[in-house]
Length: 282
Image: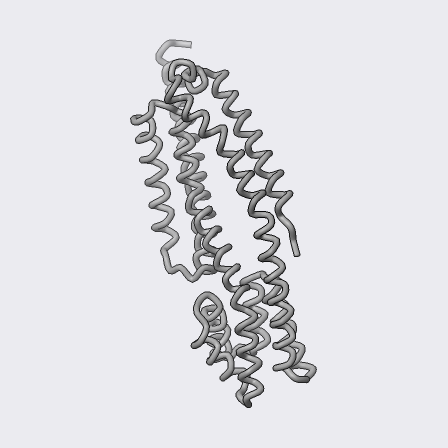
């Protein structure tokens, strides 16, 4: 085979390999963008945050492209730069998850008072529709937002039972499922709906008090797990500042990177074990 033909074959193979790499990278980028925007849209809608998921993705991508080089220029540490990029990618999902968790907890705490309000309005002679309108006006977010969605769906022609079931499917909370089941059964079978709501309010309040006590008792374990988990990282940073020469092999050699990987895996296992211990379901 002549050298010119060999050069052509090598060039075609290199072009094909580059094309496949670019095609795979573009497909991976589009797939990740689709998954990110879909998940972000669902979490934003759940939290009633009116933010464009596409803009959130672009901001996250820009941060992931800018922060690692900036960390590299400041620290000359590739591990820290890589961790900065990973944290930037994970930060939006973690933030939205925390926002939704706090919102759901606040909604559960508001539910007993709203049930008492509905029961009082029903005993005063108002209809359930008017009672829900009063509860929406008198209750702050987030429960007023969810009840507002139920009322708007009902006004658009959806049955109340279907609107309540839609709220239960959207929130996926045991307390909301109990309320939906109680109101649906009371409307279908008959009975004193006001008394049913009062009894359910007392039950949910007792459950919320018990869960609050459990969170208070397990908070010390969570704090201990956080301190123990962050202590190696803190010591590593302190020693890197005090004994820079002795810590250089940990960040600039293959063995040091392997040690950091083992540390990260052990830290993750410890975090999951502590989380499993302190997670008590009522």
